[in-house]
Amino acid sequence: MKKDMWNVKTPFFRPMWRRLLACFLVGLWGIVELVYGNKMFGVLFLGAGAYLVHQFFITFDEKDYQPPSSDS
Image 1 (cartoon, rainbow, N blue to C red):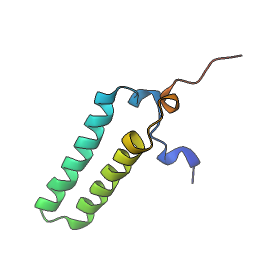
Image 2: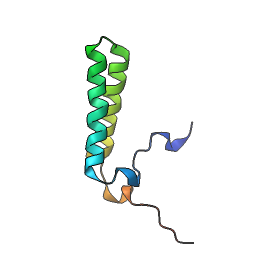
Image 3: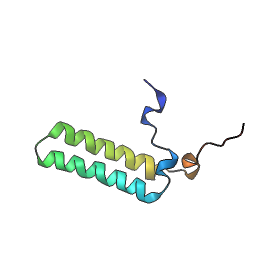
Image 4: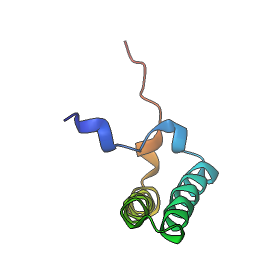
């Protein structure tokens, strides 16, 4: 398995509105799945939303979201 598969700390998510939107949409979809009776996908998406909240806000470090330097 590729190590960077679960890495969401990319320059794309540097603006806070993108991080908030991603967490909100994934969490909302988890709730929708639970409301419609799909427990497995509901828990899966809520878990993914919790992972995003942890990565984007709890262990947040600004330097993780900088584009790689092009020193050649």
